[in-house]
Amino acid sequence: DGKIDRRKRYSPAAALALARKENFHTAVCVSTLYSYITKRVFLHLTNKDLWEKGKKKKQGYQPVQRIAHPALPSIANRPEQINQRKEGGHWEIDLVVGKNGSKHVLLTMLERKKREPMIFKLPDKRAASVRKVFDTLERRMGKRRFRERFKTITTDNGSEFLEYTELIQSIHGGQRFGLYYCHSYAAWEKGSNENLNRMVRRWFPKGTDFSRVTKAEIADFQDWISHYPRKILGWKSPAELM
Image 1: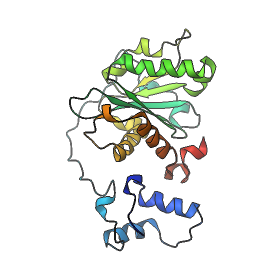
Image 2: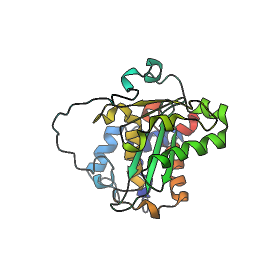
Image 3: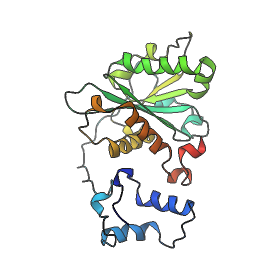
Image 4: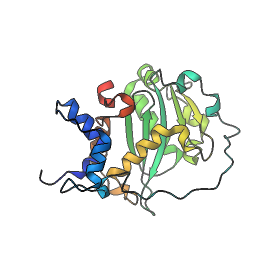
């Protein structure tokens, strides 16, 4: 009824799960809901409003050789207990770039078990800017709490993450967390964070000038994604699990 707030960008499945959680009784299933949207049953809602369905599929790609960085800890050696997501404190991180010519980027982080998100605006892609985020978190949390919250980090081979020795160095001395690197051209090895990045694009489309995005806007998105119902979490949100 009325104008739909498409900015919320809930998928039909997530919207249906939320409705049921709030005691809205319906016999409609997810596939039927998608069918209704395709058939234009809803006056102000079409497939163009759906994030995934409204996008063109990417073309196929040629196979490439996937290798790990020879001098850095490989994800292949990451302990199985981390792979199984049974323990909290293990994160995936990445950068989301914006408009061509703009240096500002977003550092996106996701905890593997509960899918807790953290997003930070950086002035550039330099390794020093990434380290500064963790230095700040260490100071804010204190040594003990930080090491409970951040046990390991998994990332790609971007130059901003390759200063391994400096990145793992705690401001309190010693090593602050374990660090593992994915194979090249294997984004699915940190698929939870890749999914977070796709969600980022629902709020900040490709070509966004992040220098013009405020901390309040980033906080709004982080709050939104923290409360977004997730199928993999039994349609609970990360905020509920936290």
